[in-house]
Image 1 (tube, rainbow, N blue to C red):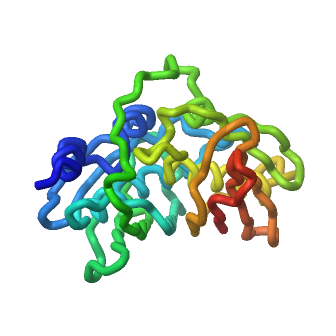
Image 2 (tube, one colour; image 1 turned 180 degrees about the vertical axis):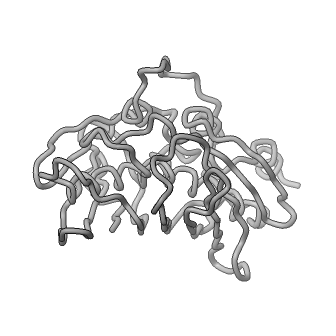
Length: 270
Protein backbone atom coordinates (compact mmCIF):
# COMPACT_ATOMS: atom_id res chain seq x y z
CA UNK A 1 0.00 0.00 0.00
CA UNK A 2 1.37 3.43 -0.95
CA UNK A 3 1.47 6.37 1.44
CA UNK A 4 -1.31 7.99 -0.62
CA UNK A 5 -3.51 4.90 -0.30
CA UNK A 6 -2.83 4.73 3.44
CA UNK A 7 -3.71 8.39 3.94
CA UNK A 8 -6.88 8.12 1.84
CA UNK A 9 -8.10 4.92 3.48
CA UNK A 10 -7.77 6.53 6.89
CA UNK A 11 -10.23 9.16 5.66
CA UNK A 12 -12.60 6.99 3.64
CA UNK A 13 -15.36 9.57 3.26
CA UNK A 14 -16.30 10.98 -0.13
CA UNK A 15 -18.48 13.59 1.62
CA UNK A 16 -16.45 15.55 4.21
CA UNK A 17 -17.32 15.40 7.90
CA UNK A 18 -18.20 19.10 7.85
CA UNK A 19 -20.95 18.52 5.25
CA UNK A 20 -22.34 15.52 7.11
CA UNK A 21 -22.42 17.36 10.44
CA UNK A 22 -23.70 20.60 8.93
CA UNK A 23 -26.74 19.01 7.28
CA UNK A 24 -27.33 16.23 9.80
CA UNK A 25 -26.40 13.31 7.51
CA UNK A 26 -25.77 10.01 9.26
CA UNK A 27 -24.98 6.48 8.13
CA UNK A 28 -27.47 3.69 8.72
CA UNK A 29 -25.58 1.07 6.72
CA UNK A 30 -22.16 0.85 5.06
CA UNK A 31 -21.02 -2.20 3.08
CA UNK A 32 -17.98 -1.17 1.02
CA UNK A 33 -17.26 -4.62 -0.41
CA UNK A 34 -20.75 -4.72 -1.96
CA UNK A 35 -20.89 -0.99 -2.83
CA UNK A 36 -24.05 -0.54 -0.73
CA UNK A 37 -24.88 2.24 1.73
CA UNK A 38 -27.84 3.84 3.48
CA UNK A 39 -27.83 7.40 4.81
CA UNK A 40 -30.45 9.62 6.45
CA UNK A 41 -30.91 13.38 6.62
CA UNK A 42 -33.55 15.43 8.48
CA UNK A 43 -35.74 17.66 6.29
CA UNK A 44 -37.49 19.80 8.90
CA UNK A 45 -36.94 23.59 8.80
CA UNK A 46 -35.50 23.53 5.28
CA UNK A 47 -37.07 26.38 3.33
CA UNK A 48 -36.38 28.19 0.07
CA UNK A 49 -35.01 31.68 0.93
CA UNK A 50 -36.78 33.21 -2.08
CA UNK A 51 -40.29 31.96 -1.33
CA UNK A 52 -40.21 30.88 2.31
CA UNK A 53 -41.83 27.61 1.24
CA UNK A 54 -40.58 24.13 2.18
CA UNK A 55 -37.90 22.96 -0.25
CA UNK A 56 -36.74 19.58 -1.50
CA UNK A 57 -33.46 21.11 -2.67
CA UNK A 58 -31.48 19.65 0.27
CA UNK A 59 -32.28 16.15 -1.00
CA UNK A 60 -29.60 16.78 -3.63
CA UNK A 61 -27.06 16.85 -0.80
CA UNK A 62 -28.32 13.51 0.51
CA UNK A 63 -28.39 11.93 -2.96
CA UNK A 64 -24.87 13.16 -3.70
CA UNK A 65 -23.58 11.83 -0.38
CA UNK A 66 -25.19 8.41 -0.85
CA UNK A 67 -24.34 8.06 -4.53
CA UNK A 68 -20.88 9.46 -4.03
CA UNK A 69 -19.93 6.99 -1.32
CA UNK A 70 -20.98 3.83 -3.20
CA UNK A 71 -19.07 5.04 -6.25
CA UNK A 72 -16.18 5.84 -3.94
CA UNK A 73 -16.23 2.31 -2.55
CA UNK A 74 -15.51 1.05 -6.09
CA UNK A 75 -12.45 3.21 -6.77
CA UNK A 76 -9.15 1.61 -7.67
CA UNK A 77 -5.92 2.08 -5.67
CA UNK A 78 -4.61 5.63 -5.89
CA UNK A 79 -7.95 7.06 -7.05
CA UNK A 80 -10.56 9.45 -5.66
CA UNK A 81 -14.07 10.17 -6.94
CA UNK A 82 -15.71 13.38 -8.15
CA UNK A 83 -19.36 13.77 -9.19
CA UNK A 84 -20.06 14.52 -12.86
CA UNK A 85 -23.86 14.08 -13.03
CA UNK A 86 -26.68 14.01 -10.48
CA UNK A 87 -30.40 13.44 -10.83
CA UNK A 88 -33.32 13.36 -8.42
CA UNK A 89 -36.91 12.34 -9.19
CA UNK A 90 -39.71 12.75 -6.65
CA UNK A 91 -43.38 11.89 -6.23
CA UNK A 92 -44.73 13.70 -3.18
CA UNK A 93 -48.47 13.48 -3.90
CA UNK A 94 -50.28 12.82 -0.65
CA UNK A 95 -47.07 13.08 1.39
CA UNK A 96 -47.24 16.74 2.40
CA UNK A 97 -44.24 18.58 3.77
CA UNK A 98 -41.10 16.61 4.51
CA UNK A 99 -40.69 17.41 8.20
CA UNK A 100 -38.67 14.38 9.31
CA UNK A 101 -35.76 12.22 8.18
CA UNK A 102 -35.44 10.92 4.61
CA UNK A 103 -33.57 7.66 4.04
CA UNK A 104 -31.42 7.17 0.93
CA UNK A 105 -30.64 3.52 0.18
CA UNK A 106 -27.88 3.36 -2.41
CA UNK A 107 -26.19 0.71 -4.54
CA UNK A 108 -23.93 0.64 -7.56
CA UNK A 109 -25.58 0.13 -10.94
CA UNK A 110 -23.81 -1.64 -13.79
CA UNK A 111 -20.15 -2.52 -14.29
CA UNK A 112 -17.26 -0.31 -13.26
CA UNK A 113 -15.63 1.51 -16.14
CA UNK A 114 -14.25 4.98 -16.72
CA UNK A 115 -17.06 6.15 -14.44
CA UNK A 116 -19.22 4.61 -11.73
CA UNK A 117 -23.00 5.01 -11.40
CA UNK A 118 -24.83 4.88 -8.08
CA UNK A 119 -28.63 4.66 -7.81
CA UNK A 120 -30.70 5.27 -4.68
CA UNK A 121 -34.24 4.97 -3.37
CA UNK A 122 -35.56 7.78 -1.18
CA UNK A 123 -37.95 6.83 1.62
CA UNK A 124 -39.90 9.08 3.99
CA UNK A 125 -42.11 7.86 6.83
CA UNK A 126 -41.97 4.33 5.42
CA UNK A 127 -43.05 5.42 1.92
CA UNK A 128 -40.92 5.54 -1.21
CA UNK A 129 -40.99 9.14 -2.44
CA UNK A 130 -38.47 8.95 -5.26
CA UNK A 131 -34.95 8.15 -6.23
CA UNK A 132 -31.71 9.55 -7.55
CA UNK A 133 -28.51 8.79 -9.39
CA UNK A 134 -24.94 10.01 -9.15
CA UNK A 135 -22.27 9.40 -11.76
CA UNK A 136 -18.68 9.79 -10.60
CA UNK A 137 -15.40 9.88 -12.45
CA UNK A 138 -11.98 9.18 -11.02
CA UNK A 139 -9.07 11.50 -10.30
CA UNK A 140 -5.58 10.97 -8.91
CA UNK A 141 -5.74 10.71 -5.12
CA UNK A 142 -2.59 12.85 -4.93
CA UNK A 143 -4.82 15.84 -5.75
CA UNK A 144 -6.92 15.22 -2.63
CA UNK A 145 -6.13 16.69 0.79
CA UNK A 146 -8.55 15.29 3.40
CA UNK A 147 -9.24 18.00 5.96
CA UNK A 148 -10.86 18.32 9.36
CA UNK A 149 -12.29 21.83 9.50
CA UNK A 150 -13.40 23.81 12.53
CA UNK A 151 -17.08 24.74 12.79
CA UNK A 152 -17.82 28.22 11.39
CA UNK A 153 -21.54 28.55 12.08
CA UNK A 154 -23.19 28.71 15.48
CA UNK A 155 -26.48 26.86 14.98
CA UNK A 156 -29.77 27.51 16.73
CA UNK A 157 -33.44 26.80 16.11
CA UNK A 158 -33.41 29.97 13.98
CA UNK A 159 -30.64 28.81 11.65
CA UNK A 160 -32.02 28.66 8.11
CA UNK A 161 -31.10 26.46 5.19
CA UNK A 162 -29.62 29.53 3.48
CA UNK A 163 -27.44 30.07 6.57
CA UNK A 164 -26.22 26.47 6.38
CA UNK A 165 -25.33 27.07 2.71
CA UNK A 166 -23.65 30.45 3.35
CA UNK A 167 -26.04 31.82 0.72
CA UNK A 168 -28.36 34.81 0.43
CA UNK A 169 -30.84 36.20 -2.09
CA UNK A 170 -29.38 38.87 -4.37
CA UNK A 171 -32.21 39.31 -6.86
CA UNK A 172 -35.74 37.93 -6.59
CA UNK A 173 -36.67 39.10 -10.09
CA UNK A 174 -37.48 37.03 -13.19
CA UNK A 175 -33.95 35.61 -13.12
CA UNK A 176 -33.57 34.60 -9.49
CA UNK A 177 -30.03 35.05 -8.19
CA UNK A 178 -28.68 33.41 -5.03
CA UNK A 179 -25.19 34.40 -3.85
CA UNK A 180 -22.86 31.61 -2.71
CA UNK A 181 -20.35 32.91 -0.20
CA UNK A 182 -17.16 31.34 1.08
CA UNK A 183 -17.39 28.77 3.85
CA UNK A 184 -14.66 26.14 3.71
CA UNK A 185 -16.92 23.76 5.63
CA UNK A 186 -18.98 23.59 2.42
CA UNK A 187 -16.03 22.53 0.30
CA UNK A 188 -15.08 18.99 -0.66
CA UNK A 189 -11.61 17.53 -0.25
CA UNK A 190 -10.33 19.14 -3.45
CA UNK A 191 -11.41 22.48 -1.90
CA UNK A 192 -14.24 23.50 -4.21
CA UNK A 193 -17.93 23.87 -3.28
CA UNK A 194 -19.37 20.42 -2.56
CA UNK A 195 -21.41 19.09 -5.49
CA UNK A 196 -24.50 18.32 -3.43
CA UNK A 197 -24.52 21.80 -1.89
CA UNK A 198 -24.16 23.37 -5.33
CA UNK A 199 -26.95 21.17 -6.74
CA UNK A 200 -29.22 22.30 -3.89
CA UNK A 201 -28.44 25.93 -4.70
CA UNK A 202 -29.41 25.35 -8.32
CA UNK A 203 -32.74 23.85 -7.26
CA UNK A 204 -33.49 26.83 -5.01
CA UNK A 205 -32.83 29.34 -7.81
CA UNK A 206 -34.73 27.43 -10.51
CA UNK A 207 -37.70 26.80 -8.23
CA UNK A 208 -37.85 30.48 -7.31
CA UNK A 209 -37.74 31.48 -10.97
CA UNK A 210 -40.66 29.30 -12.02
CA UNK A 211 -42.72 30.35 -8.99
CA UNK A 212 -42.14 34.05 -9.55
CA UNK A 213 -45.44 35.95 -9.08
CA UNK A 214 -47.39 33.02 -7.59
CA UNK A 215 -49.00 33.97 -4.28
CA UNK A 216 -50.20 30.45 -3.46
CA UNK A 217 -50.21 27.00 -5.00
CA UNK A 218 -46.46 27.07 -5.53
CA UNK A 219 -45.16 24.43 -7.93
CA UNK A 220 -43.09 21.73 -6.24
CA UNK A 221 -39.93 20.29 -7.78
CA UNK A 222 -40.47 16.83 -9.25
CA UNK A 223 -37.15 16.29 -11.01
CA UNK A 224 -33.66 17.77 -11.11
CA UNK A 225 -30.89 17.05 -13.61
CA UNK A 226 -27.46 18.48 -12.80
CA UNK A 227 -24.27 18.44 -14.87
CA UNK A 228 -20.91 19.33 -13.32
CA UNK A 229 -18.85 21.16 -15.93
CA UNK A 230 -16.07 22.94 -14.09
CA UNK A 231 -14.77 23.34 -10.51
CA UNK A 232 -17.07 25.68 -8.56
CA UNK A 233 -15.04 28.25 -6.65
CA UNK A 234 -16.84 30.34 -4.04
CA UNK A 235 -16.00 34.01 -3.63
CA UNK A 236 -17.40 37.51 -3.81
CA UNK A 237 -19.01 36.88 -7.21
CA UNK A 238 -20.08 33.21 -7.05
CA UNK A 239 -23.81 32.69 -7.48
CA UNK A 240 -26.71 30.59 -8.71
CA UNK A 241 -28.96 32.01 -11.43
CA UNK A 242 -32.41 30.55 -12.09
CA UNK A 243 -34.41 31.22 -15.26
CA UNK A 244 -37.95 30.10 -16.17
CA UNK A 245 -38.04 28.22 -19.47
CA UNK A 246 -41.77 27.50 -19.56
CA UNK A 247 -44.39 28.15 -16.89
CA UNK A 248 -47.88 26.72 -17.16
CA UNK A 249 -50.80 26.45 -14.77
CA UNK A 250 -49.82 23.06 -13.34
CA UNK A 251 -46.28 22.45 -14.50
CA UNK A 252 -43.13 24.33 -15.41
CA UNK A 253 -39.54 23.92 -16.51
CA UNK A 254 -36.70 26.05 -15.20
CA UNK A 255 -32.97 26.21 -15.85
CA UNK A 256 -30.22 27.21 -13.46
CA UNK A 257 -26.49 27.65 -13.54
CA UNK A 258 -23.80 28.03 -10.90
CA UNK A 259 -21.22 30.66 -11.77
CA UNK A 260 -17.96 30.55 -9.89
CA UNK A 261 -15.88 33.44 -8.59
CA UNK A 262 -13.70 32.92 -11.67
CA UNK A 263 -16.68 33.82 -13.87
CA UNK A 264 -17.00 30.34 -15.34
CA UNK A 265 -20.23 28.34 -15.48
CA UNK A 266 -19.46 25.45 -13.16
CA UNK A 267 -22.78 23.55 -13.07
CA UNK A 268 -26.01 23.59 -15.00
CA UNK A 269 -29.39 22.16 -14.04
CA UNK A 270 -32.91 21.73 -15.38
